[in-house]
Length: 461
Ligand SMILES: Cc1cc2nc3c(=O)[nH]c(=O)nc-3n(C[C@H](O)[C@H](O)[C@H](O)COP(=O)(O)OP(=O)(O)OC[C@H]3O[C@@H](n4cnc5c(N)ncnc54)[C@H](O)[C@@H]3O)c2cc1C
Image (cartoon, rainbow, N blue to C red; front, side, top):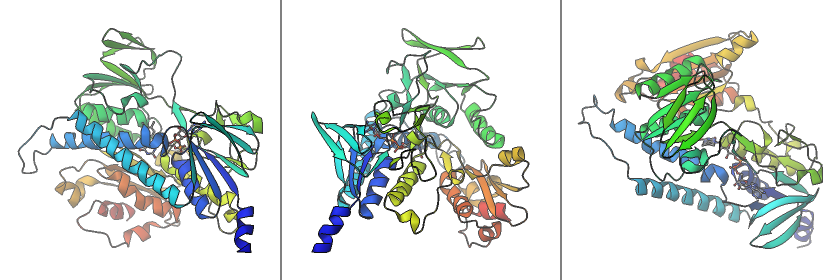
């Protein structure tokens, strides 16, 4: 009995602001390790990831993908049928998936004894967090604090989204209508996913691409496969153009570019990045340093104030849900002192990422172009899906697998996959990169036949 009381007295009071992937993973994990956790969230547990970003976008893309698939079933021994959008059905499906995920996350947090408070929080001292919940103000003492407040869409000074026809990514979910025509501004990951989504649903899409390649940060061979698909869908690509204004003229939206080109469409969506949610947190009260609004962190996700951590989009590292969750986990371990026993640092260069277009694009680790830029010796092997039995059976043999390895040791350094199920297949290369496996380890794995994964073994030969 005595030791129970004693351990309760010394239990670490850990306060987390933000219930997205970073915050809720940190909460569950820290509570499991024995912390007394309070999680504060102003919108929904699950965060922007569940409400606006990953989950609704991928749900819509799955439905759009199914529609696009029905247009390509000729050649599979089937009659061609046109699918039609059932808008209320799609809205219900998004809400249903969001609801289930939210309930699962809340159940998990409850099962670990995490105290959840719905409200807006800010710092009122280095160890004090104030939360306003349902009109009641509460101050909470903390031994450790995690800032996991995420980010929101960036809105440039030359454009005023109206939520009707000039949209941010957050205005697109749940979908109210499907635009007849859509101009997407921004050709990074979010932009190309929006092009894919709206064109799958039959909108006439134009894409404003500031450089000469969509996905400017990606391998040109990877981007080329996507550009081919866009052109096949009739997407108008405006390369080398920067949008300078977006205006509404009645039912028309006019996007003007710096090279004089003008695009007219029924709607336009901005996909030009995000800004961190730190402006209303009063982090200065605790002396926390910011850089461009992002909390600067060290490899343990600590800010310059040792007991105040940041994880997820607000930390300015890779803006991915998977990275946010892993940072949250590492923070929990650090808060509870586990890093002194066994701790593997997060290596952001080894994060796998995917783009849910068609074909899907996924990559991890060192890219061929990066290695050349660094003058680093590498071995690159590439195998197209056109020679893969399962891809032929699937009636979709677009794309390829590329593996980058160390020529001396055979250690897998990175890879990229373009093709159906690329987002799942990349996990094999991701594991190899994280665990320092060699190409022989992949070649000697007994894989399924016929399987798309056989292309991985071939590329590793
Ligand atoms: C359209 C789109 C699609 C995406 N798709 C993917 C994808 O497929 N895969 C992927 O890995 N990533 C994807 N991302 C990125 C991913 O959504 C983010 O990286 C992820 O949500 C970051 O998680 P987080 O925990 O940092 O923040 P969030 O998920 O943004 O959660 C932060 C939470 O903090 C709360 N909050 C903020 N301030 C306060 C306050 N003062 N008090 C209380 N609560 C507060 C917010 O309400 C929010 O719920 C996508 C992004 C976009 C824009």
